[in-house]
Image (tube, rainbow, N blue to C red; front, side, top):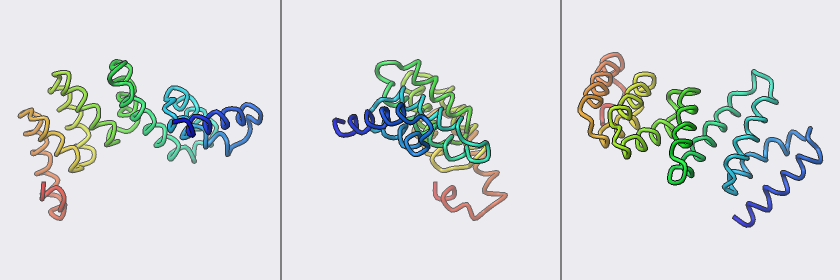
Length: 169
């Protein structure tokens, strides 16, 4: 992280010297994330999102969700409540954002909250019948949520029998 840290520091200095530099503003969050400076990366990406016109915010928000998820992953051992809060925010913004949904379900399952983990997976699966959510529900082993997801999967397969990945799962 030495090189990453120096790069992040240089971009922080550049953004302070020229706060209107769009290039520095856009590069700063990922540089901070690479250096493991998650809180700063979150703040910088939020600034990027707010600086863009509404029509161009989609990709920047996706990056923000990714930073929140990876920040949560880094915080799980030291600040689990903060980590779960970040995951919840990412899921609220995009209920089918697979990295946040899966990490949240795994984290809740590790804490013995299989019912909550199953609900998160089921809601994500209903919105986007992705095989990742189904596989995670199988790993979870919660019968009720697995049955609900299998029922939803059968409905999807009835509507679209060519859902190959779902059929294989």
